[in-house]
Image (cartoon, rainbow, N blue to C red; front, side, top):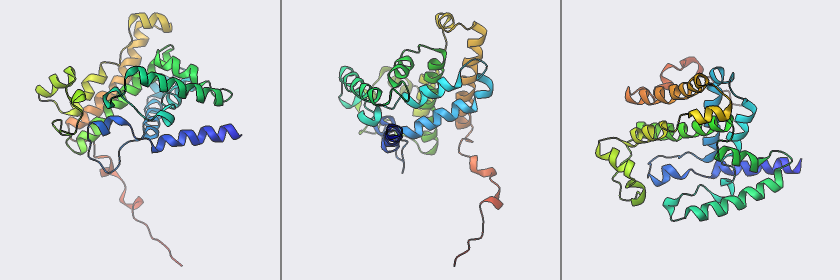
Length: 248
């Protein structure tokens, strides 16, 4: 069980590894999301949608893709080209990290294959995992923007990030960061006719999958618009929140 424990502890490092997006956008919050939060949220979204999706996909495979897709970041951190690291350099260190993890843990889970299939949307389950991943990138910023406005003109935001043509265009249209992330990542939730053939599913089945995932992100965004997104605690039963505490 030595390797099983080591894999668990490497995964635990993700709980101390912040996602770079909110940091780069200078989100002001006491606690920013870490990569373990991200993975748990993806698993939760997948589980919430299971009743509508499990007739199409193998959930064991889906969970494996979600759990493993960011595991190399326990070693590399969550790095982006906006931090002065080239795409080639990101690919280089990521490949080293994947090989290290795969050599150690291939007897437990085929990490290299799972990450390769996830990156290339090789299977329907990998495609669904990637779409949920994109959805979560949007929900994170929708939540943060709803809690407190993110100043898109903050001088500490990296210029190359702020001046991405799509981002600049939407800011000039009066959109906030939540609007931008919602519109941008929503576009990634789609299955092409070529992918239908690749995954051996019908156009109707593909539309059902896409509509299910879009239904989640659309409702999330609409609650931001309606100013109800942060109302979760309002219906909590008070009797469950007040209790006697006995002391010796």
